[in-house]
Amino acid sequence: MGILLVLLLSAFLTGRFGIANVSWALTYTGRITGAILILAAATTVLGAAAVVDHWYRNSFPYSGMVALIGTVAALMTNGMLLLETLKGDSTAYRVLWGLLTAGSLWAVIAVWRTSVVIPAPKRVAAAVIVSSCLALANFGYQSFYKPYQSGAKPVIKLTVGKPMLSQNRKAFSVPVDIKLENQSDLGFYVLGAEFHAMGERVPLSPRDRLRTQWRADAEQWSKSHFLETHPLSRREIHQPGQLVAAQPWMPPGHWIESNDEFVTRTVVQLPIGTPYDQLAFYATASFARKDRLGLEKVDPKGNSWSGGKVPRWMKTQKDVDSVIYRGRVRENNAIDEQTRDPRFVTVYWTFGPHGASVLETITRSGEEDRKMSDAETHDLVNRYGIVEAQTGPFEQTLWDIKSQR
Image (cartoon, rainbow, N blue to C red; front, side, top):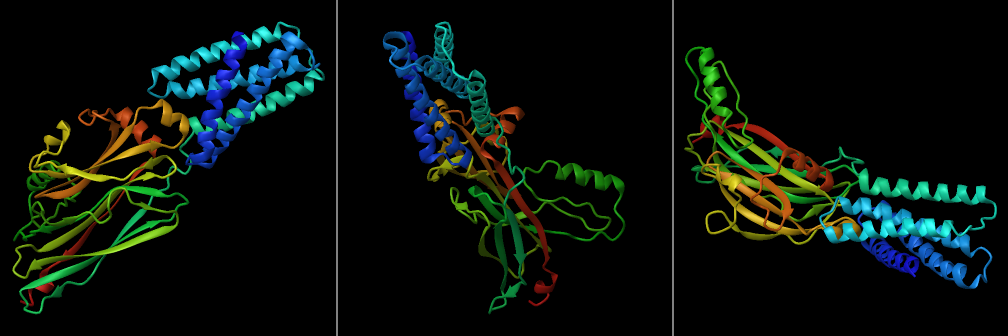
């Protein structure tokens, strides 16, 4: 019988995804959704048994009502799963759940036409409506309304110490403490984190600089690809900074839990005769929420100067090198994990004479070269809860330390 085939196949798939969601979904609502799917699968199985009794045996007086409830449960779950798979990449699952939704609708109509006897129809209808609304609300919240706590993100703090002379007075060092604070109730994966220091020459003009010179400075600064700040001054002649130190300060793929912090220290060393007047310190990082994705080990995958694959849209940046990391991304629930193609995060730690930064992409395998549209980028950021944090510049004058040579 076609109705039995639709109900049993619906129950098998629904129960399979429900068990998987209960086992490893990354959010509480995802696990509740799994429990609801298991309950719907059990109801559908009971409905299939009731269909057999209703059509052939009539040994149970309310088998028609149970059959109708089972077919309605199958229709609702198949319809919701169809809506979810429409956001995925799998054509096979879309077709499958499209057929199951149509089949379960036909089953509901077929059972209803057998003049099912429903005792206390108002109470039964109220119970079905209430339970259906609760299931729809939970499923909709999990699948279509994910930006809860969307403003949460870690904070980076820099503390720059006092420059210290070496024993032979030919060099000096500046200690810098980097502190990552996560004051939210969410955990975050670290996609990439970088620290860099810029050496700046800032000679003074003997007279006030003209407005045309300010405009020329502004045009020059606008061409930079990095986070370096570009002040305008009446007397100071700011020149493009030169990178003097850069490093990742937290490995890609590591994480910080809710209400936790991470502290590290780095030291920037320069010869006492350095031509720079100031040092500027920057720290940046990008994160993804742990309730939006699972991240497998992120491994180094080469570099831009010895065969590592760099997207074409990055090759337009002149004199910029990159170290590349890549890892597999897991979706935060079993339905999306099955119906979406595998995604991979690629992290580029980029650096050049005029700065450093971290870039990351999450794409399907082979799509690293494709530059995303603004709409695609927005959807990606919302889906995986990607946030960025940065601090700096922290300016440190070198006149005091250089006067001691």
